[in-house]
Image (tube, rainbow, N blue to C red):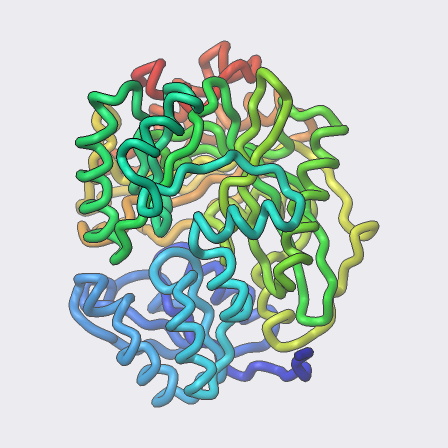
Length: 452
């Protein structure tokens, strides 16, 4: 059913940190009042200071605050909000939360409950992608197979393989397996880990591509049947399956493959009647130049500024407009691309181990200059709490070519100062200096091989 267009007066942001600030900024430009929710640990956070109103929704622990659905809905009620933006992470892909928002008379700023349900489960989404004629890797469903059947299927598939949790995300619930001796104990352990982390221990197995790139396509859809893509992003630089650097366009795709992968993403979005911003993720085999559907993220992505830098489209504003029921302002021919864009995720972490390194920031200098954007929530004197994701900033750099973008990025990272805590800034500098990165001769296991 096509919704009537309605103007939001007040939006509650059910999130924290830089994405909450990002949503607040777009709301202000659209003339919409904002409500920030926060835990006791985030009382001094920048998103609380920037919003028109704020409500404390619980203690520091996420399950008691940012995942506390009754408190969030109550905050929306007492402040008179008429819509909730979930950001990314936390409740952003929780179909039960989206359904409760509807029951409370609130608009969930994201896709329909049906879309979240259709694409939220990794196994079901692969089945759906196959029906939509989108290339997929044939999975082995652990729950539906005996040990003998699994062994026979894996022998046919060949090692290495990848075991994944169906409800997993952000690299959690995934493990590369090299042999059967490693497989059987790993299945038991990963099942328990997935159940503890996601409430669902369902696992599946698929062939591990030896030389892959992680390519994703940004989708923008409205509630009136319009679906356009905004190009691809290359998210291959990862640490333990966690993205740390993203760029666009991908330096390895031919124009033919680029068109095919973007068309496949649009085809899938249309097949499920998608109606918001979303990202379709693919594994690209550099040896065969074939791509395979991995999953669809039914939310805004951390790396959305890369696409905004390439296209000039404000994805958050468009997401809000579409949630209001507005028709899309863009057809595919309206989307144009320029420049090369690289995003660096700046994390408060030990540069050697990658372990979180929260603490008090004694000095912070944000970089600037032509072609530089910084999305952050930290400031001098702020204490990074130990309870949440370690990312504290995103630095987005753009230039007319990839070579010039890398050169500019080196200047920008050298200009960035975060004192008092450890960060991964030096890791990014090492990557930019590495000939393999400069020549784009790498895959998703780049960092594990480099041991940097």
